Image (cartoon, rainbow, N blue to C red):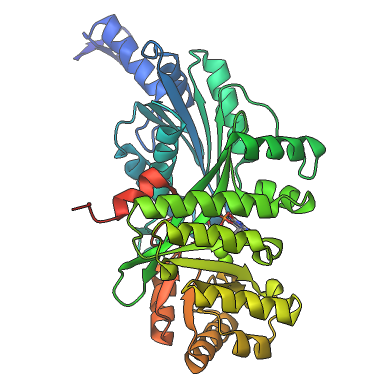
Length: 445
Ligand code: C2E
Ligand code: MG
Ligand code: MG
């Protein structure tokens, strides 16, 4: 840079600064400024579009993810702009270190865009999990420790059309619940309203075509941290709408009487997978009340046991409402399961109506404290009292207790000090497809 000072007639001085850098370099710098976000240093929305426009490898499919930090406006209001900015910078830093990324950008105030090349939907699911895992650990800044979460919308597409890619990912994001994911493949088809006959018809076809998937969420010992097993949770890999969560289709299944069929598919797929893994601990499977009382359930369990699944490796989860079935039937069913060594768990314990006398006589193996009572720990006195009560009840009756929905270390500490011995929640792991969960298992000898 050259600075030249010259005196001009009225005794003023004229300063001229000339930059010798080439015109091209200056333009390149301007382009960088225009396509980057000043706060995080990441490409901005314009930069992301440039990434999307860059030619994809021939025949490759790409995953475009949009990740929107949940309730960031509230975070902003509570902690102030300066700390909120630091949090965003930290989110950006964590995202940047994800493996094999082609691009990560800050495309909106609290929205990030990510781009990967993927082989297939399973591969895309692995990337989604990796992106979500960025929020597993809380964010610490300026003496504050804040848990953050995000919803994620993704599009898997072979299209090179920027418009198709960004619109598809945007629509997926609009369908993702807080903390949740909506993953779409190729062209987007809007989700019909729940309860619609169309969705019911599609669900019937999905059962026939094998579109249901099982995800596995780790259950761990709160004492040693060891993996105790997993809960099998259903997902629907819809051909055009992406991966659907239970809340998006179980209400329709329920109304259409399709729950037993879904439970049967999940039990079959999960027990096969569990056998293939060599039964690493217990496999918990959810059953609706109609499937619990069906004889086909016992036949299917017997078939799995005959193929080598140990009885205690299988746990049947049911809600409190299920226990309200006629006494003789429910009693016979518990006896039949326990006689096979199969264990039983009462799911979402505490939110429904439980008959303590039935509980005492049925002796389920486990009570699962509902997430609703874990959320407020350790500060909420009511939640603490209820969690304490359930753990105490379990201890008195000789029923094991597992806490659901543990997301933060402080919740874990509180549950440990109450004497709760096992748990499940995002702190330990989200529900994962088999190809991801398998990495938690010790390598086969
Ligand atoms: P659930 O059996 O109580 O399963 C636990 C749910 O809590 C799962 O939601 C899981 O993803 C979520 N969760 C686990 N840890 C955390 C956490 O730390 N934080 C938060 N916010 N959530 C957590 P998902 O997979 O959406 O399943 C929802 C419900 O759908 C299940 O609740 C269960 O009632 C039902 N469901 C899922 N799969 C099946 C199935 O195969 N058969 C039947 N009958 N019901 C199923
Ligand atoms: Mg459950
Ligand atoms: Mg539950």
